[in-house]
Length: 160
Image 1 (cartoon, rainbow, N blue to C red):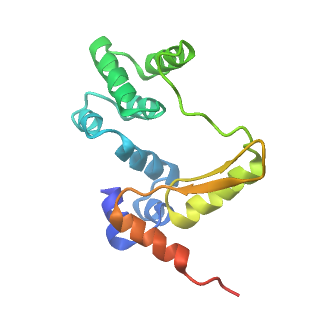
Image 2 (cartoon, rainbow, N blue to C red):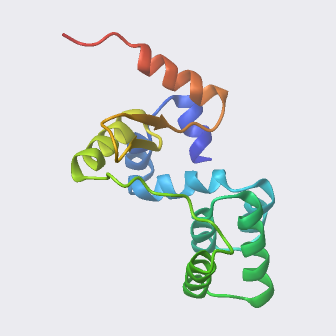
């Protein structure tokens, strides 16, 4: 529902959060769940997985890894904390690969990401390579309508 409001009304997550009386982070966390494989989204909708479990599972790199952990959470009836510990243990043993974080992640980059995130109403990452000053900006979108909204925002002329 949040995504549909953002898409149809063209509002940012921040504006939506204000209108529905929630924190922006609450809206962002719910929208992040849309990155789960469809099968896991269904498990959340049916109450087989909590949103806390789902957020932990989202930290894993691949859909296969996410599905494996979700099945284990359900079959063993793990709490969210137990799920977090298990995911950490599996990553440490090399059974599950976590995505690599940028080595050069300072507060200026974090502040820039936050400003861009508020500006575009979606997840934004700045990746700067540790060995050089080169990098890239990644702006996440969920469908073609959101892509078009982001494209239009990026193509707006700069203000003097």
